[in-house]
Length: 274
Image 1 (cartoon, rainbow, N blue to C red):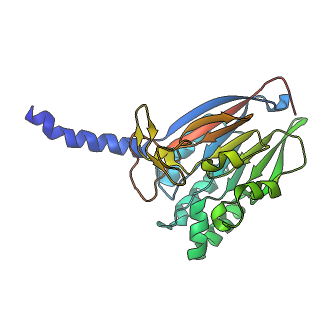
Image 2: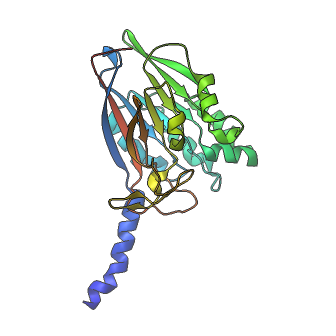
Image 3: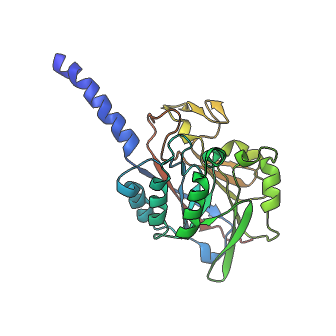
């Protein structure tokens, strides 16, 4: 019994290491009114890296992305961390990710925060552009495949200018097309404000940081205790929001019952197109 008790701390530490350093690939299939050419179109989401290292150059993350065989990769904010500003980690990862599929990026609150503190965000922004990543700053772009097309919209994090709510940013970015519309927006707590789109990719909540069985996440920024939007799929008013648990950690450095996550979404043509 004494030996078992003495081994318990070691086992707990090993479990904690495993839960913070192994990456999970979560896969969803979503019925969507996309053109037939976009049937099985696969979108991989990477969120909230926070300059963490999950293998050399984040190889464990890259392996999961590669396994999902993405058509595009979306990066939904907080790729860097305002408290641990080693932007080289995230830049190295992005340079490898863009080799796997076209990458689209929107900022999070940490990019906004670091922007006010130093020039490092501008250095990061320049490196992202140089790597070939498309950064969407309250704007949209068209993705074509075969004879069909969909629209991707990206919002700058509201932390850059709190005077503009998410509704206004989205209104400015909204195109006039009637394509199937995918929104990249870091903060899931604004779900009710993300109108006139079909699919939303968000992060920010870190899965609630500590996940309690049968209850979900314990705390998320912008949502507080037992957040409503912390992980997985949420559907309302014809919109579906995907909330990634993300990869890294921020103020509280440990994830409990909450492995780092890469998300893969496969769009399935529902028979009707926009």
